[in-house]
Image (cartoon, rainbow, N blue to C red; front, side, top):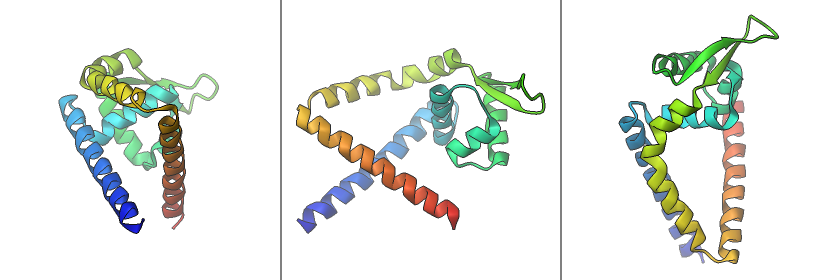
Length: 150
């Protein structure tokens, strides 16, 4: 059993490394870094937010978020908008249509292939995948919080 666990750990590491390489390639094709294009995903999922909220979600410093927002604004992927409730605050508003137009052509085939792969599993297999992903996410979030507190 220990050999199987080690084999799965190595497979998981290979998956993570391959994911990084793929995202770097997508980012390059989109004219962004691998991590920058992933941050666009946060903006698409969460919608308008403050720079502080983006820093919390991404784990970036507020200074790094300012640079990120500057790069995205230059490419017209988002705009800064004054908060109507507090004019001292700025809301970052993603240009969802432009972001999707930039990234979707680079991802659509991968998303379709992933959907077909998941559909190929039995109901029990899907449940195992759900359990793995949920628990792995919890473990990564815990480790991230632990590292950020040190």
